Image (cartoon, rainbow, N blue to C red; front, side, top):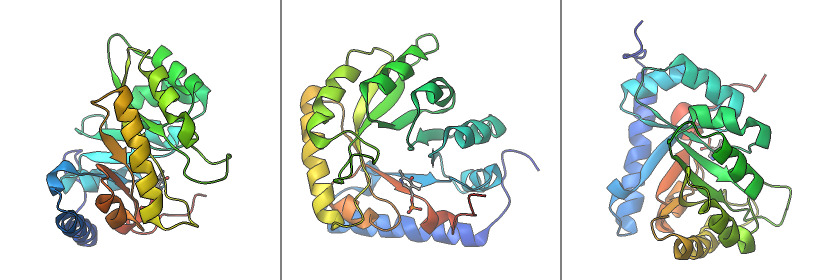
Length: 234
Ligand SMILES: *Cc1c(COP(=O)(O)O)cnc(C)c1O
């Protein structure tokens, strides 16, 4: 087995193209161009061989939510032209390891994490980062409070090895995704006042990606609808 050609998996190919059709439909209904939407396949809990199979189907953007898993899989697949998106809660002391493997970090939710990612820069490489916003009432969930998103964005702008790309959020379970994503969009507008090129809105998962497309999401993070059910965490 070479790294260029993953194992054939017709069911995986079928799920991937079904989701892409649904994204295209949602974009059409919203009067948007599907080409401005990036579909990230979330591969957490699945082995590197699944990432390889996705790559063989043309997937280039993948997402992981745990540092150890990100580092292990990226390390197993060094020759594949993949972009790794880190989407999970990050401990400050894992920032250097995350930075070594990730091309983008969606889950920056405090100044200290931004500082740690910046300090871990290697030479003059630039890391794409997003401000994660907590749309729930539970302060224990990941993300900065909506009212603090702008000041975190301003802080990121002082760190030259980070490139502020936009905002990320997960819709709360107890709220219609439409209203949650509408709030995210207005927060995104505030962040764009800080940095006009920070246009990414990372929102939408298996259960709510069509609503996210309608609300202007530019990056969808879709896991189980494409990969199939996740194996037990073990
Ligand atoms: C797991 C995960 C996803 C994907 O979830 P699915 O429901 O499987 O599509 C998206 N975003 C984050 C932050 C995740 O942790």
